[in-house]
Image (cartoon, rainbow, N blue to C red; front, top):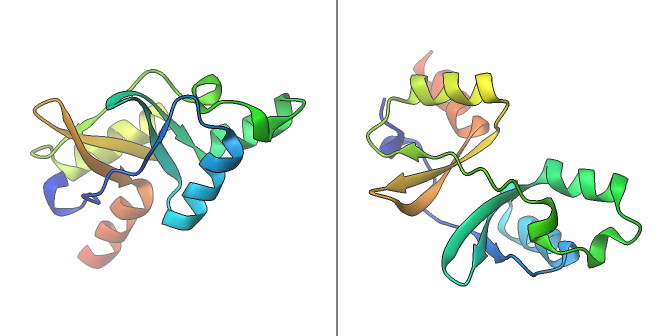
Length: 124
C-alpha cells in the first residue's frame, strides 16, 4: 500500500525557539508524538517524545530549553507514492518512529510506526 493511503495529512509543528514546556503541551493537545520544528515556515528538524525525555535527563531547566536544541536536524522523509513496506523497513533500520511525509519537497503530513502497525493489523 502507498504511504498516501496511510499517513496523517496534518502537519503539527512548533517554532525552533519555542520552549520545551510549550512543545510538550502542544504534543499533548494534538495527541501526537512528534512535531515538525519550523524556522518561520521552513522545516529545520523534528522533535519527538524521546527528545523531550533526553532534555529532561540532560538539562538543568528542561522546560526553558528551546526546541531547536533537542530536535533532530537530519530530516528524512517518505514520499506519498512510496510503498508502506519500504518505509516501514527504513524506519526500523534507522530507529525512527515518526517520519515526515513530503510531496515534491513540501511537507504534507507525518507517518508513525503506529500508523504502519495498524495497516499491518488491518491486513490480517
